[in-house]
Image 1 (cartoon, rainbow, N blue to C red):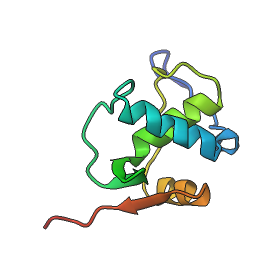
Image 2: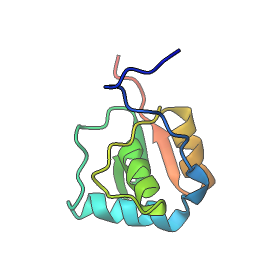
Image 3: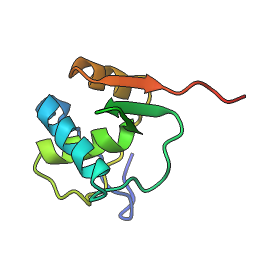
Length: 101
């Protein structure tokens, strides 16, 4: 199977580089307004100093910090239970919001 020229190549992500300090720094960037999320989180949240922050956005920033990539880099990854497990594994409180149906 060949890749079209306009399709970005998929590189393996290096999650092992992400440490708790990267997540804390990412939370601080979100709270300070330096790197607000592009859209409102609907389901996954991380609690940092009493504030509920969008877990996928925080984890995205933490990954970029850990791997010394520009914070405006386009990083795509599937969120869900993997995001929750990764954040909890680093010692954070991460939750899935209850459905509002």
